[in-house]
Image 1 (cartoon, rainbow over the protein chains, first blue to last red):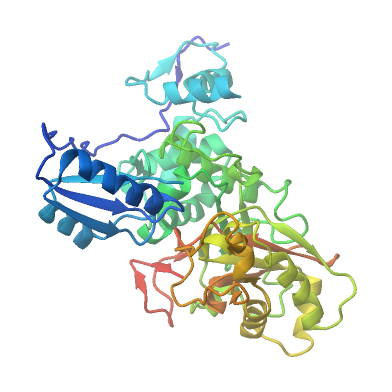
Image 2 (image 1 turned 135 degrees about the horizontal axis):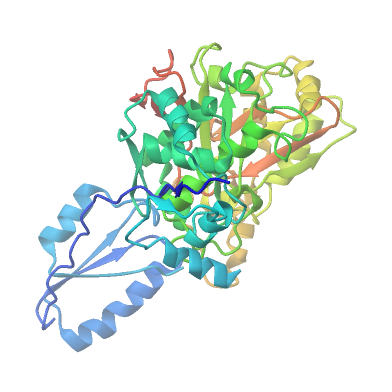
Length: 97
Length: 377
Protein backbone atom coordinates (compact mmCIF):
# COMPACT_ATOMS: atom_id res chain seq x y z
CA UNK A 1 0.00 0.00 0.00
CA UNK A 2 1.37 3.40 -0.98
CA UNK A 3 2.19 5.79 1.83
CA UNK A 4 2.68 8.78 -0.48
CA UNK A 5 0.15 11.60 -0.27
CA UNK A 6 -2.43 11.66 -3.07
CA UNK A 7 -2.64 14.60 -5.48
CA UNK A 8 -6.00 16.35 -5.65
CA UNK A 9 -7.22 18.87 -8.22
CA UNK A 10 -9.50 21.89 -8.05
CA UNK A 11 -12.16 21.77 -10.81
CA UNK A 12 -13.51 25.30 -10.29
CA UNK A 13 -11.18 27.62 -12.20
CA UNK A 14 -10.30 31.02 -10.83
CA UNK A 15 -12.53 34.07 -11.02
CA UNK A 16 -10.39 36.87 -12.38
CA UNK A 17 -13.00 39.54 -12.89
CA UNK A 18 -13.24 42.35 -10.38
CA UNK A 19 -16.69 42.86 -8.85
CA UNK A 20 -18.40 46.08 -9.89
CA UNK A 21 -18.85 48.30 -6.83
CA UNK A 22 -22.24 49.78 -6.03
CA UNK A 23 -22.79 53.39 -7.03
CA UNK A 24 -22.72 55.88 -4.13
CA UNK A 25 -26.09 55.91 -2.35
CA UNK A 26 -28.25 59.02 -2.57
CA UNK A 27 -29.19 60.62 0.75
CA UNK A 28 -32.32 62.35 -0.61
CA UNK A 29 -34.58 61.71 -3.60
CA UNK A 30 -36.58 64.90 -4.01
CA UNK A 31 -36.01 66.58 -7.34
CA UNK A 32 -33.88 63.76 -8.75
CA UNK A 33 -34.44 62.18 -12.14
CA UNK A 34 -35.96 58.71 -11.66
CA UNK A 35 -35.42 56.04 -14.28
CA UNK A 36 -37.79 53.06 -14.35
CA UNK A 37 -36.35 49.94 -16.00
CA UNK A 38 -39.02 47.44 -17.02
CA UNK A 39 -37.34 44.07 -17.63
CA UNK A 40 -40.41 42.69 -19.55
CA UNK A 41 -41.10 39.97 -16.98
CA UNK A 42 -44.75 38.96 -16.86
CA UNK A 43 -45.79 41.38 -14.14
CA UNK A 44 -42.87 43.82 -14.00
CA UNK A 45 -44.66 46.63 -15.82
CA UNK A 46 -47.70 46.35 -13.56
CA UNK A 47 -45.55 46.46 -10.45
CA UNK A 48 -43.40 49.32 -11.68
CA UNK A 49 -46.17 51.46 -13.15
CA UNK A 50 -48.13 50.94 -9.96
CA UNK A 51 -45.17 52.19 -7.94
CA UNK A 52 -44.66 55.44 -9.83
CA UNK A 53 -47.50 57.48 -8.40
CA UNK A 54 -47.04 56.69 -4.69
CA UNK A 55 -43.28 57.14 -4.95
CA UNK A 56 -43.67 60.46 -6.76
CA UNK A 57 -46.19 61.69 -4.20
CA UNK A 58 -43.70 60.92 -1.47
CA UNK A 59 -40.50 62.18 -3.07
CA UNK A 60 -41.52 64.59 -5.88
CA UNK A 61 -39.01 63.55 -8.48
CA UNK A 62 -37.77 66.14 -10.94
CA UNK A 63 -38.36 63.82 -13.88
CA UNK A 64 -39.51 60.24 -14.46
CA UNK A 65 -38.28 58.23 -17.46
CA UNK A 66 -39.60 54.76 -18.39
CA UNK A 67 -37.37 52.23 -20.19
CA UNK A 68 -37.89 48.66 -21.37
CA UNK A 69 -35.43 45.83 -21.89
CA UNK A 70 -36.01 43.62 -24.91
CA UNK A 71 -35.75 40.42 -22.86
CA UNK A 72 -35.91 39.94 -19.11
CA UNK A 73 -33.09 37.41 -19.22
CA UNK A 74 -30.72 38.94 -21.75
CA UNK A 75 -28.39 41.84 -21.11
CA UNK A 76 -29.76 45.29 -21.78
CA UNK A 77 -28.34 46.89 -24.90
CA UNK A 78 -25.21 48.97 -24.09
CA UNK A 79 -26.88 52.02 -25.66
CA UNK A 80 -29.85 51.63 -23.32
CA UNK A 81 -27.57 51.40 -20.28
CA UNK A 82 -25.69 54.50 -21.45
CA UNK A 83 -28.91 56.39 -21.95
CA UNK A 84 -30.19 55.44 -18.50
CA UNK A 85 -26.88 56.38 -16.88
CA UNK A 86 -26.77 59.74 -18.67
CA UNK A 87 -30.32 60.87 -18.04
CA UNK A 88 -31.14 59.60 -14.56
CA UNK A 89 -29.92 60.00 -11.00
CA UNK A 90 -31.57 56.89 -9.56
CA UNK A 91 -33.12 53.82 -11.18
CA UNK A 92 -35.94 51.60 -10.04
CA UNK A 93 -36.36 48.08 -11.39
CA UNK A 94 -38.15 44.88 -10.36
CA UNK A 95 -38.33 41.27 -11.43
CA UNK A 96 -42.13 41.03 -11.39
CA UNK A 97 -42.35 37.28 -12.10
CA UNK B 1 -31.53 17.17 -0.67
CA UNK B 2 -31.77 20.68 0.61
CA UNK B 3 -29.03 20.05 3.16
CA UNK B 4 -26.75 18.74 0.42
CA UNK B 5 -27.43 21.74 -1.82
CA UNK B 6 -26.46 24.17 0.94
CA UNK B 7 -23.31 22.20 1.72
CA UNK B 8 -22.25 22.21 -1.94
CA UNK B 9 -22.83 25.92 -2.16
CA UNK B 10 -20.71 26.67 0.87
CA UNK B 11 -17.91 24.43 -0.35
CA UNK B 12 -17.75 26.25 -3.64
CA UNK B 13 -16.82 29.40 -1.81
CA UNK B 14 -13.74 27.86 -0.19
CA UNK B 15 -10.70 30.05 -0.76
CA UNK B 16 -7.84 27.58 -0.44
CA UNK B 17 -7.25 24.17 -1.93
CA UNK B 18 -4.71 21.54 -0.89
CA UNK B 19 -2.32 20.01 -3.41
CA UNK B 20 -2.43 16.61 -1.72
CA UNK B 21 -4.37 14.62 0.81
CA UNK B 22 -3.06 11.80 2.96
CA UNK B 23 -2.55 8.35 1.60
CA UNK B 24 -5.53 6.15 2.27
CA UNK B 25 -8.11 8.93 1.98
CA UNK B 26 -11.09 7.75 -0.11
CA UNK B 27 -10.89 10.27 -2.93
CA UNK B 28 -14.43 9.67 -4.14
CA UNK B 29 -15.75 10.58 -0.73
CA UNK B 30 -13.22 13.43 -0.43
CA UNK B 31 -14.47 15.09 -3.63
CA UNK B 32 -18.02 14.70 -2.32
CA UNK B 33 -17.07 16.61 0.82
CA UNK B 34 -15.55 19.37 -1.31
CA UNK B 35 -18.89 19.75 -3.07
CA UNK B 36 -17.56 19.10 -6.58
CA UNK B 37 -20.05 16.43 -7.60
CA UNK B 38 -23.32 16.45 -9.51
CA UNK B 39 -24.55 13.97 -6.93
CA UNK B 40 -22.94 10.93 -8.53
CA UNK B 41 -19.42 9.73 -7.65
CA UNK B 42 -16.70 11.47 -9.66
CA UNK B 43 -13.62 9.80 -11.07
CA UNK B 44 -10.68 11.12 -8.99
CA UNK B 45 -8.44 12.97 -11.47
CA UNK B 46 -4.75 12.10 -11.74
CA UNK B 47 -1.99 14.18 -13.26
CA UNK B 48 -1.54 11.66 -16.06
CA UNK B 49 -5.21 11.63 -17.03
CA UNK B 50 -5.42 15.42 -16.98
CA UNK B 51 -2.30 15.72 -19.08
CA UNK B 52 -3.69 13.32 -21.70
CA UNK B 53 -6.76 15.53 -22.17
CA UNK B 54 -4.76 18.76 -22.25
CA UNK B 55 -2.49 17.32 -24.91
CA UNK B 56 -5.45 16.60 -27.20
CA UNK B 57 -6.69 20.14 -26.62
CA UNK B 58 -3.36 21.46 -27.90
CA UNK B 59 -1.24 21.63 -24.76
CA UNK B 60 -0.77 24.88 -22.78
CA UNK B 61 -2.84 23.91 -19.69
CA UNK B 62 -3.35 27.53 -18.62
CA UNK B 63 -4.82 28.55 -21.99
CA UNK B 64 -8.16 30.25 -21.30
CA UNK B 65 -10.92 28.77 -23.48
CA UNK B 66 -13.79 30.85 -22.05
CA UNK B 67 -15.46 31.98 -18.82
CA UNK B 68 -18.54 30.19 -17.50
CA UNK B 69 -21.42 32.21 -15.98
CA UNK B 70 -22.91 33.04 -13.58
CA UNK B 71 -19.76 32.60 -11.45
CA UNK B 72 -17.61 33.49 -14.48
CA UNK B 73 -14.91 31.01 -13.52
CA UNK B 74 -12.06 30.65 -16.00
CA UNK B 75 -12.30 27.47 -18.08
CA UNK B 76 -8.67 26.82 -18.85
CA UNK B 77 -7.68 23.66 -20.68
CA UNK B 78 -6.50 22.19 -17.39
CA UNK B 79 -9.78 22.93 -15.63
CA UNK B 80 -11.70 21.54 -18.59
CA UNK B 81 -9.58 18.40 -18.40
CA UNK B 82 -10.11 18.01 -14.64
CA UNK B 83 -13.88 18.13 -15.08
CA UNK B 84 -13.76 15.76 -18.05
CA UNK B 85 -11.77 13.20 -16.07
CA UNK B 86 -14.16 13.59 -13.14
CA UNK B 87 -17.07 12.91 -15.50
CA UNK B 88 -15.48 9.72 -16.79
CA UNK B 89 -14.63 10.99 -20.28
CA UNK B 90 -11.95 9.51 -22.51
CA UNK B 91 -9.37 12.04 -23.76
CA UNK B 92 -10.65 11.79 -27.34
CA UNK B 93 -13.96 13.34 -26.26
CA UNK B 94 -12.13 16.58 -25.48
CA UNK B 95 -12.72 18.42 -28.79
CA UNK B 96 -16.46 17.78 -28.46
CA UNK B 97 -16.65 19.01 -24.88
CA UNK B 98 -14.55 22.07 -25.70
CA UNK B 99 -16.68 22.96 -28.72
CA UNK B 100 -19.83 22.50 -26.63
CA UNK B 101 -18.54 24.83 -23.92
CA UNK B 102 -17.51 27.47 -26.47
CA UNK B 103 -20.96 27.25 -28.03
CA UNK B 104 -22.60 27.59 -24.61
CA UNK B 105 -20.37 30.56 -23.76
CA UNK B 106 -21.48 32.41 -26.89
CA UNK B 107 -23.49 35.47 -25.89
CA UNK B 108 -26.41 34.43 -28.12
CA UNK B 109 -26.99 31.34 -25.97
CA UNK B 110 -27.26 33.37 -22.75
CA UNK B 111 -25.87 30.65 -20.49
CA UNK B 112 -26.09 33.09 -17.59
CA UNK B 113 -29.87 33.02 -17.89
CA UNK B 114 -30.08 29.30 -18.59
CA UNK B 115 -28.09 28.54 -15.45
CA UNK B 116 -30.06 30.82 -13.18
CA UNK B 117 -33.65 30.49 -14.42
CA UNK B 118 -36.50 29.05 -12.37
CA UNK B 119 -37.48 27.13 -15.54
CA UNK B 120 -36.18 23.58 -15.96
CA UNK B 121 -34.16 24.18 -19.14
CA UNK B 122 -30.89 22.32 -19.64
CA UNK B 123 -28.54 22.57 -22.61
CA UNK B 124 -29.19 19.74 -25.07
CA UNK B 125 -26.13 18.83 -27.13
CA UNK B 126 -26.55 17.25 -30.57
CA UNK B 127 -23.39 16.15 -32.39
CA UNK B 128 -23.09 15.78 -36.16
CA UNK B 129 -20.39 14.55 -38.51
CA UNK B 130 -17.65 11.91 -38.46
CA UNK B 131 -16.64 12.56 -34.84
CA UNK B 132 -19.82 10.76 -33.72
CA UNK B 133 -18.61 7.38 -34.91
CA UNK B 134 -14.95 8.14 -34.16
CA UNK B 135 -15.67 8.45 -30.44
CA UNK B 136 -18.53 5.95 -30.37
CA UNK B 137 -21.52 8.17 -29.63
CA UNK B 138 -24.95 6.58 -29.61
CA UNK B 139 -27.36 8.03 -32.16
CA UNK B 140 -29.57 4.95 -32.22
CA UNK B 141 -31.58 2.84 -29.82
CA UNK B 142 -32.13 4.60 -26.45
CA UNK B 143 -29.91 7.53 -27.48
CA UNK B 144 -31.43 9.85 -24.87
CA UNK B 145 -31.09 7.14 -22.24
CA UNK B 146 -28.33 5.29 -20.47
CA UNK B 147 -25.75 2.84 -21.72
CA UNK B 148 -23.23 4.75 -23.82
CA UNK B 149 -20.05 6.18 -22.33
CA UNK B 150 -19.56 9.03 -24.80
CA UNK B 151 -23.13 10.32 -24.61
CA UNK B 152 -23.24 9.95 -20.84
CA UNK B 153 -19.89 11.43 -19.92
CA UNK B 154 -19.75 14.25 -22.49
CA UNK B 155 -23.07 15.53 -21.17
CA UNK B 156 -21.93 14.97 -17.62
CA UNK B 157 -18.68 16.89 -18.20
CA UNK B 158 -20.69 19.84 -19.53
CA UNK B 159 -22.85 19.76 -16.40
CA UNK B 160 -19.87 19.45 -14.04
CA UNK B 161 -18.30 22.50 -15.70
CA UNK B 162 -21.58 24.40 -15.37
CA UNK B 163 -21.58 23.49 -11.66
CA UNK B 164 -17.91 23.71 -10.69
CA UNK B 165 -16.75 26.54 -12.96
CA UNK B 166 -20.07 28.26 -13.60
CA UNK B 167 -21.27 27.96 -10.02
CA UNK B 168 -24.75 26.86 -11.07
CA UNK B 169 -25.41 25.00 -7.86
CA UNK B 170 -29.05 24.11 -7.17
CA UNK B 171 -30.56 26.42 -4.61
CA UNK B 172 -27.69 28.88 -4.94
CA UNK B 173 -27.23 30.35 -8.42
CA UNK B 174 -29.42 27.72 -10.13
CA UNK B 175 -32.96 28.62 -9.13
CA UNK B 176 -34.76 25.95 -11.18
CA UNK B 177 -38.05 25.03 -9.54
CA UNK B 178 -37.94 21.40 -10.70
CA UNK B 179 -34.90 20.86 -12.92
CA UNK B 180 -35.05 17.80 -15.17
CA UNK B 181 -33.09 14.56 -15.62
CA UNK B 182 -31.15 16.11 -18.51
CA UNK B 183 -29.33 18.22 -15.95
CA UNK B 184 -27.18 15.14 -15.28
CA UNK B 185 -26.42 14.59 -18.95
CA UNK B 186 -28.26 15.60 -22.15
CA UNK B 187 -26.12 14.69 -25.12
CA UNK B 188 -26.88 12.73 -28.28
CA UNK B 189 -25.71 12.39 -31.86
CA UNK B 190 -27.84 12.57 -35.00
CA UNK B 191 -28.41 9.19 -36.63
CA UNK B 192 -27.07 10.25 -40.02
CA UNK B 193 -26.68 6.65 -41.16
CA UNK B 194 -30.39 5.84 -40.76
CA UNK B 195 -31.67 9.24 -41.84
CA UNK B 196 -33.13 9.67 -45.34
CA UNK B 197 -32.44 13.41 -45.09
CA UNK B 198 -29.34 15.55 -45.18
CA UNK B 199 -27.72 15.82 -41.73
CA UNK B 200 -28.66 18.81 -39.60
CA UNK B 201 -25.27 20.48 -39.93
CA UNK B 202 -25.39 20.16 -43.73
CA UNK B 203 -28.76 21.92 -43.69
CA UNK B 204 -26.99 24.72 -41.82
CA UNK B 205 -24.29 25.02 -44.47
CA UNK B 206 -21.51 22.78 -43.21
CA UNK B 207 -19.96 20.00 -45.25
CA UNK B 208 -20.93 16.42 -44.40
CA UNK B 209 -17.26 15.77 -43.50
CA UNK B 210 -17.33 18.53 -40.89
CA UNK B 211 -18.15 17.67 -37.29
CA UNK B 212 -20.31 20.06 -35.30
CA UNK B 213 -21.99 20.58 -31.96
CA UNK B 214 -25.43 22.12 -31.64
CA UNK B 215 -26.76 23.40 -28.31
CA UNK B 216 -30.28 24.45 -27.38
CA UNK B 217 -31.69 25.27 -23.95
CA UNK B 218 -34.39 22.66 -23.70
CA UNK B 219 -37.08 20.92 -21.74
CA UNK B 220 -37.01 17.10 -21.71
CA UNK B 221 -38.13 15.19 -24.83
CA UNK B 222 -41.88 14.56 -25.07
CA UNK B 223 -42.61 11.23 -26.77
CA UNK B 224 -44.87 11.37 -29.84
CA UNK B 225 -46.37 8.01 -30.74
CA UNK B 226 -47.93 7.23 -34.11
CA UNK B 227 -48.17 3.64 -35.29
CA UNK B 228 -50.82 4.09 -37.95
CA UNK B 229 -49.86 6.87 -40.35
CA UNK B 230 -48.32 5.93 -43.68
CA UNK B 231 -47.99 9.49 -44.92
CA UNK B 232 -46.14 12.63 -43.79
CA UNK B 233 -49.28 14.44 -42.74
CA UNK B 234 -50.34 11.74 -40.29
CA UNK B 235 -46.95 11.49 -38.58
CA UNK B 236 -46.51 15.25 -38.43
CA UNK B 237 -50.06 15.88 -37.19
CA UNK B 238 -49.17 13.85 -34.09
CA UNK B 239 -46.11 16.05 -33.53
CA UNK B 240 -48.21 19.16 -34.13
CA UNK B 241 -50.55 17.88 -31.43
CA UNK B 242 -47.66 17.63 -28.96
CA UNK B 243 -46.57 21.15 -29.89
CA UNK B 244 -50.03 22.71 -29.67
CA UNK B 245 -50.43 23.14 -25.95
CA UNK B 246 -49.92 26.14 -23.70
CA UNK B 247 -48.12 23.99 -21.10
CA UNK B 248 -44.56 24.22 -22.43
CA UNK B 249 -42.27 27.23 -22.39
CA UNK B 250 -41.94 27.67 -26.14
CA UNK B 251 -45.68 28.22 -26.44
CA UNK B 252 -45.63 31.14 -24.02
CA UNK B 253 -42.10 32.52 -24.47
CA UNK B 254 -41.49 31.81 -28.20
CA UNK B 255 -37.90 31.23 -29.35
CA UNK B 256 -36.79 27.84 -30.65
CA UNK B 257 -37.64 24.18 -30.25
CA UNK B 258 -36.37 20.81 -31.49
CA UNK B 259 -38.08 17.86 -33.12
CA UNK B 260 -36.45 14.43 -33.21
CA UNK B 261 -37.85 12.08 -35.84
CA UNK B 262 -37.27 8.38 -35.29
CA UNK B 263 -35.93 6.56 -38.36
CA UNK B 264 -39.25 4.81 -39.11
CA UNK B 265 -41.20 8.06 -39.09
CA UNK B 266 -38.46 9.75 -41.13
CA UNK B 267 -38.60 7.00 -43.76
CA UNK B 268 -42.38 7.19 -43.97
CA UNK B 269 -42.13 10.92 -44.61
CA UNK B 270 -39.22 10.64 -47.04
CA UNK B 271 -41.01 8.05 -49.18
CA UNK B 272 -43.39 10.82 -50.17
CA UNK B 273 -40.54 13.00 -51.33
CA UNK B 274 -40.67 15.43 -48.45
CA UNK B 275 -37.48 17.22 -47.40
CA UNK B 276 -36.42 18.93 -44.19
CA UNK B 277 -37.90 22.25 -45.25
CA UNK B 278 -41.27 20.60 -46.03
CA UNK B 279 -41.35 18.98 -42.60
CA UNK B 280 -40.44 22.14 -40.70
CA UNK B 281 -42.90 24.20 -42.73
CA UNK B 282 -45.73 21.72 -42.09
CA UNK B 283 -45.00 21.61 -38.37
CA UNK B 284 -44.89 25.39 -38.20
CA UNK B 285 -48.06 25.88 -40.24
CA UNK B 286 -50.28 23.32 -38.53
CA UNK B 287 -49.25 23.73 -34.90
CA UNK B 288 -50.04 26.62 -32.60
CA UNK B 289 -52.55 27.90 -30.09
CA UNK B 290 -55.36 30.45 -30.31
CA UNK B 291 -54.30 33.61 -28.54
CA UNK B 292 -57.34 33.34 -26.29
CA UNK B 293 -55.91 30.17 -24.75
CA UNK B 294 -52.56 31.82 -24.09
CA UNK B 295 -54.36 34.81 -22.58
CA UNK B 296 -56.66 32.64 -20.44
CA UNK B 297 -59.32 34.69 -22.23
CA UNK B 298 -58.33 37.55 -19.95
CA UNK B 299 -59.70 35.74 -16.91
CA UNK B 300 -56.84 37.17 -14.84
CA UNK B 301 -56.71 40.55 -16.53
CA UNK B 302 -55.92 41.69 -20.05
CA UNK B 303 -52.95 39.82 -21.48
CA UNK B 304 -50.64 41.05 -24.23
CA UNK B 305 -47.62 38.68 -23.68
CA UNK B 306 -44.56 40.71 -24.56
CA UNK B 307 -42.49 37.57 -25.12
CA UNK B 308 -44.36 36.85 -28.34
CA UNK B 309 -43.41 38.80 -31.47
CA UNK B 310 -45.08 42.18 -31.82
CA UNK B 311 -46.43 41.26 -35.24
CA UNK B 312 -48.76 38.52 -33.93
CA UNK B 313 -52.45 39.45 -33.87
CA UNK B 314 -53.77 39.34 -30.32
CA UNK B 315 -57.42 38.52 -31.08
CA UNK B 316 -58.66 35.54 -29.10
CA UNK B 317 -59.18 33.51 -32.31
CA UNK B 318 -55.81 34.43 -33.86
CA UNK B 319 -53.43 31.52 -34.33
CA UNK B 320 -50.21 31.95 -32.39
CA UNK B 321 -47.40 29.84 -33.90
CA UNK B 322 -45.25 27.86 -31.46
CA UNK B 323 -42.12 29.58 -32.86
CA UNK B 324 -41.89 32.64 -35.11
CA UNK B 325 -40.54 30.77 -38.16
CA UNK B 326 -40.03 27.22 -39.52
CA UNK B 327 -36.31 27.96 -39.18
CA UNK B 328 -36.77 27.96 -35.39
CA UNK B 329 -37.77 24.28 -35.45
CA UNK B 330 -34.50 22.34 -35.25
CA UNK B 331 -35.03 18.96 -36.87
CA UNK B 332 -32.99 15.83 -36.19
CA UNK B 333 -33.27 12.14 -36.95
CA UNK B 334 -32.24 9.90 -34.07
CA UNK B 335 -33.15 6.70 -32.32
CA UNK B 336 -33.40 3.00 -33.05
CA UNK B 337 -34.65 1.53 -36.30
CA UNK B 338 -37.55 -0.25 -34.59
CA UNK B 339 -40.44 1.74 -33.19
CA UNK B 340 -42.56 4.65 -34.31
CA UNK B 341 -41.82 7.11 -31.53
CA UNK B 342 -40.55 10.59 -32.32
CA UNK B 343 -40.11 13.45 -29.87
CA UNK B 344 -40.95 17.12 -29.47
CA UNK B 345 -38.46 19.05 -27.34
CA UNK B 346 -39.63 22.49 -26.24
CA UNK B 347 -37.03 25.16 -25.70
CA UNK B 348 -36.69 27.71 -22.94
CA UNK B 349 -37.96 30.74 -24.87
CA UNK B 350 -36.68 33.74 -26.79
CA UNK B 351 -34.21 34.37 -23.97
CA UNK B 352 -31.74 31.92 -25.50
CA UNK B 353 -30.68 31.37 -29.11
CA UNK B 354 -29.37 27.93 -30.14
CA UNK B 355 -25.78 27.83 -31.35
CA UNK B 356 -23.97 25.52 -33.76
CA UNK B 357 -20.19 25.32 -33.76
CA UNK B 358 -17.62 23.42 -35.74
CA UNK B 359 -15.54 20.93 -33.76
CA UNK B 360 -12.78 20.95 -36.34
CA UNK B 361 -12.66 24.72 -36.73
CA UNK B 362 -13.79 26.91 -39.59
CA UNK B 363 -17.06 28.36 -40.73
CA UNK B 364 -19.78 26.74 -42.84
CA UNK B 365 -19.73 27.38 -46.55
CA UNK B 366 -23.23 28.84 -46.65
CA UNK B 367 -23.54 30.51 -43.27
CA UNK B 368 -22.70 34.17 -42.96
CA UNK B 369 -23.63 34.95 -39.35
CA UNK B 370 -20.62 33.27 -37.77
CA UNK B 371 -17.89 34.69 -35.60
CA UNK B 372 -14.82 32.62 -34.84
CA UNK B 373 -16.50 29.37 -35.84
CA UNK B 374 -19.64 29.94 -33.74
CA UNK B 375 -22.97 30.53 -35.48
CA UNK B 376 -26.20 31.55 -33.78
CA UNK B 377 -28.99 29.68 -35.49
